[in-house]
Image 1: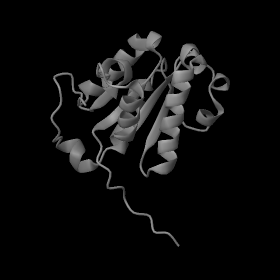
Image 2: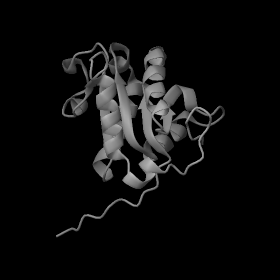
Image 3: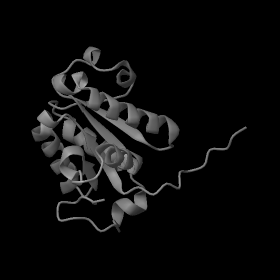
Image 4: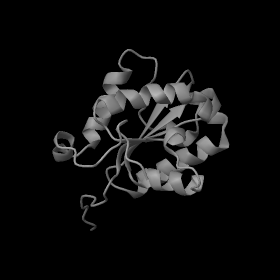
Length: 162
């Protein structure tokens, strides 16, 4: 019988936020909510480093985030890159203990999203409880000691940079 052990993985980010570039205004809004509450994050199109391969940056951000937030809009569910990032996040969820993927539905039906994401509890962006439930989900993923005493050096915007 296998014994389950707590993960010893070191995370740079409390969250990573994945979205289609055309949805940058929504991602910015979600990121600001989280950063204002003290969460450290990687926001896909805003935190990419020039000159670095996009796939390498994305893979590293996925691997070093406690929670992956995937914005699901009509544009993103049709975009092959967005679908690939969602797959990476799901594979990591399956392979790593304590990792979460939170789908955020933005004016899109669950029937329109990839089958692999439909089984996850998600959040409706426009609902009255969106912000409260998002913050609650991230707080639950954070170790208690670090939630009270953040020790990483972050940028003025609350993001750790590669």
